[in-house]
Image (tube, rainbow, N blue to C red; front, side):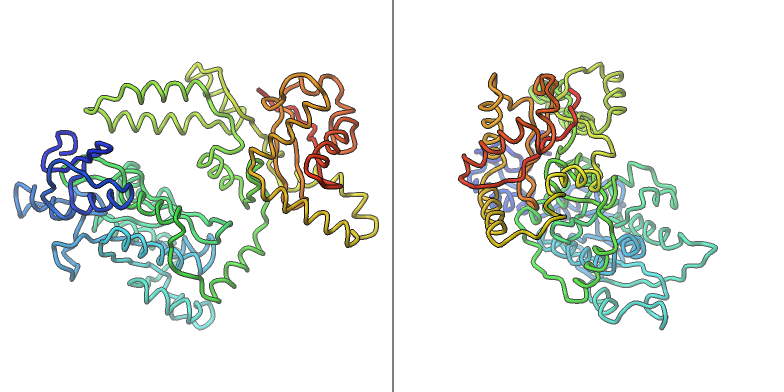
Length: 490
């Protein structure tokens, strides 16, 4: 229908094809576009499904996606769209805390409200959570999950520790809905394929910046006519998070649970580009892939993506978009081994950015490096009041500057002190708010020029001169400024 523009409306401003009045309304709200050609025939995908079914009594489970499916067990009107989600409560809580589960339940309800669809949440929990006096959960937690979902307690024995997984994924399959779990192999319990799991499983992790859980919805969904399209639920969720519209606050017991988890988790890794810290390397790597931080980017892949986008055939648009999505993931290189594999497989040789070793991503190693400047001061008497005021002033100035402005400041100071060409392509600059100050990372042997003893560290001759130049530019007396001793690979 979208390809042939049948029974649909087309936006005059951007040529997007819309097939329901709900889609048309959302498009107008998001873009401000008000002029359309054609006319939609249905209000939502559920109506479209009923309208286009050849046999009114035939099953539509295979053709409809999770968001557009109804349920014979539902007491709601058959015309309503119903979002079914089953949650592996034990998997969520054991990996985080009780607040993680209640947070996810509330977020799912916010998403359903954004999409203007009904929602049914099935929370599968161990029996003892509700009924054990010793190992049971607190009243506030039990009350809240019962308020937000249908709680299904089951007995989990040592002989079958994965029975809850079976129930969770079975409910998702029976209702053609979603399931929430970090377990990427649960679909095997009921003989489903990996492709099925990728279109039904909702993954999650905690965003330690906001303390809220971050949900990862499937990328695509199936329309009633079998056509695949961008997942509406993922798009709606992304809009909610980007606009900071979750619309609820943590209760006191939830904040305490999160704080306890936070205190017990050692933040071992950090992102050199933004400074965010993570307890596990896998979480950091996920962040690096999502944000394209602290990585190599294959320039040859970028060129291929541009060429493919320029020649998309509307008939094969979905297949081409999937190919582009795969290339966009593949072009992000996180290790030297990955670069070697990529170069061999794709015969690509042009890259930009930096490959970091695991050791260089450790918080402890980074702190050992950047604390060299402060070691003598730490062992001496505490900062006097004037120095503390100067640090506060320095932080306020740097906080008010964009990253690009800080980079221009540092690059300009280097160029002035060492002379020669612009060094912006040879030195990476990182703002360290805690110090406050700047860490530099030389990316080329040409920058060092054989004078490593004068260039590297915090007391080296050139480093001190550049620090002084930065202070003069900012009108301050002192700033933390350190140049790492690693020359990044090309």
